[in-house]
Length: 179
Image (cartoon, rainbow, N blue to C red; front, side, top):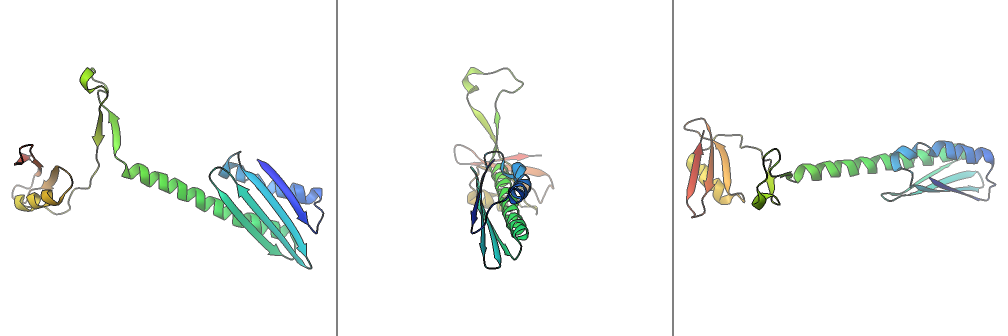
């Protein structure tokens, strides 16, 4: 963690420096060790302003606090910066989770079975799809197959009440697998 403290119209005392360093320790777990901080402390008349710039590989954040007390200004800037860091980190985690969920799961073929040399480099693609909520008739399933981008439709048959798979064969005709 790299920390640079700049004072404008104010002398940076060891008490201010130790207070800033103490408050910045909590950012180690949020941003990692590669974070760089630039703290700018300014005094104009009775306004004490603290601005903290955070730069890391993943984040570029700024927090600013302005009060009549220097320590309160630093605290306010830290709180704003911490809220931004938590929000950004949460957003990144959620984005990764959504991408992982949306992406199909890839499983290496041949796990636990003897390897076939012709299929050793191929991957199986497993797609997770939600099954339709209402039962479909065979004609409705055929219409849904025509509209779908997938070569099959899994549905609950109205007539039999069992799960069926309707698929398109290589010759263009339809095949039906009944449970």
